[in-house]
Length: 357
Image (cartoon, rainbow, N blue to C red; front, side):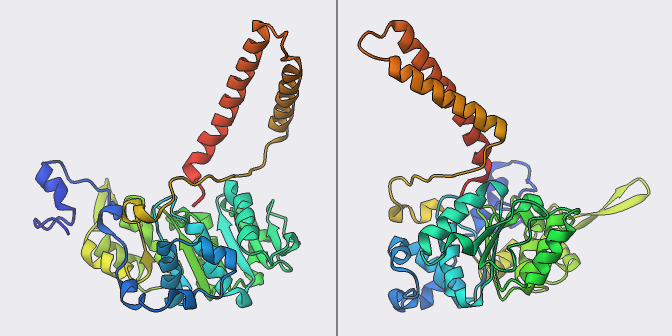
């Protein structure tokens, strides 16, 4: 629902008397997609019988619905569930349905490459380590042509990675998963330009993001264009219709300002055909009390050396911590525990902005 004053923003701002923000909060306007509900009365077990038994049993009802939503759209859609609702397992299930069309490309933030490997091996037991290739550098292309699954970090998609880019284009991936797809929000970013033809050419493409707009409808365009080229018109048409595009004057120079939002109800309706989004509040009764997850990542050589030294010191202190231990021994142990806690807290802090979905 938008403001009746015709401004295109939510009426909440008007009632509060606050100045209209340019920020477009997709979470406040886009609720769980209703289009799936009508056909969801069909037997879900029959629909998902293709899955490995362990994966099938793990799925929560709303995750089943997300998978069915994607399959009803021939494997081209955006899953925009709030962070922590299991977008990864849904994407794996959808990809598995199309396994006969692989090779599969998975593009992720660099810190999530190994968690994705763990998840793939966990839920698809027939995959062996040799079936999965993790791209380590811009010249690490040797196994791409022979691997069933290629996992690639965004950080390698740069203007000087022509060898890697050419290899990716030649591989002709039929199934593509783009994790944290809002990394493609910029039309001018090199990674967006590299990924766009790969996603468009794939038969199946699953985009995953917990922040589908990150504040402005303009940041949705590249993701939509990757899934369904020209479905929402050209960039110029989209910007004028949904981004409240206006010409700004900077001296003698003019520039389009596309940071606004307009025709949100229409945009919401169109998005509901290609995107499914659930918030935690929507599915709270289906969620387990707590989910613990191990997130492996590479340590730089210096950090690994420091960690080994810390563990060696820990072992030495614990060997000396017997009945004759003095207060000094206990103090050393506590100081070491505090130091180890701080070191792992740094890792958690760095990983937190890019949490596994």
